[in-house]
Length: 135
Image (cartoon, rainbow, N blue to C red; front, side, top):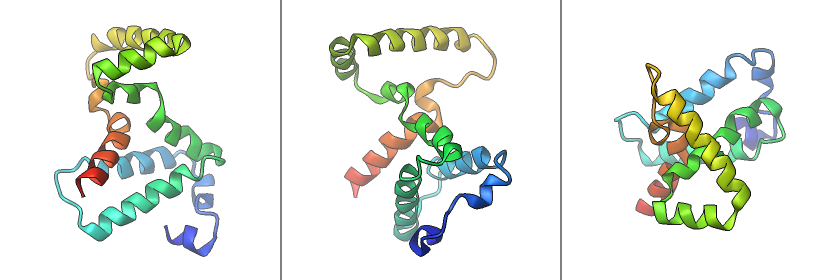
């Protein structure tokens, strides 16, 4: 957040070690999943970081991680009725949704399978919205 305030390129430190960035990003997502409650200033910092990272989509390394937060598995968080309305209104999206469900069914039989609703990237945006509405 400090680099954004200073107007410095925030992600250059990761460009020499791009293999570290996905783990860093995963750890940031898991901050909200821990059982500990964040204090108000920590929540604010987390929210500012989230805004900054979404505003950094021009960086290919960042884009690869951030777009997973708003991809089709996020739709698992919709109510069943709303999901059906959206799929009915967009037939191309319905095809992608069916394909995603087939992939999930195949993956469900493997050991270590984590359902989409329990994945950090699928809970991030709904959790951020729930927290915002709860404050």
